[in-house]
Length: 257
Image (tube, rainbow, N blue to C red):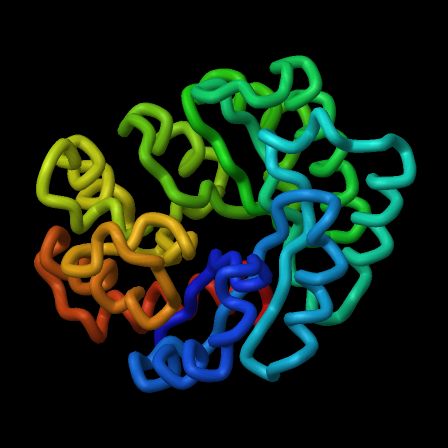
């Protein structure tokens, strides 16, 4: 069995002194590959450098919507484009819109969502999308920019079934985290899991956040991914092995790893 953690923030400081042990635990838990995802300009280069440290690591480069207010144009967009050419960089992300917190102005978020999609299209690499409380706006940008030409994934999906249907219709994958294992207030999200075909699904930890049951509240890590896979298998009335097989094939197809 093989699992792929398609979204991990292993470049963050809390992991600095324990990566070898973390990798060992991941491999024992059958998590054979991990994609390290950048979130801001200040960790773009560190993310790519980390991906070169191990054969089983890959990277995505992009600026999270929270941090788009800090972009110094046009140099930062050029940096993303340059790093995006690296052989270990398999996607542009995470990029998108977050109107829940609105840490950056909506207009700024939209501008840099569109500009980073343009970079992805130029480099012919898929996108990793963060979308929270902005379903209509996200779909609008994806259609406007013809993002389906490169494809990608809605990561850490927590939105409505209607939104899920919209992005599936555009040909995007949907990725789930440990949230689906929580014991309260996740019934609607679990219905989305039941609806989304395995052939359109990816798995991720989004670590250090969102550790699944029974580790909820602790620092998340790739070795915990199996718990999300088990919950998908339960919700879809299938086997862990089937979930692992198909989601792993999906990840390899999308990210060409």
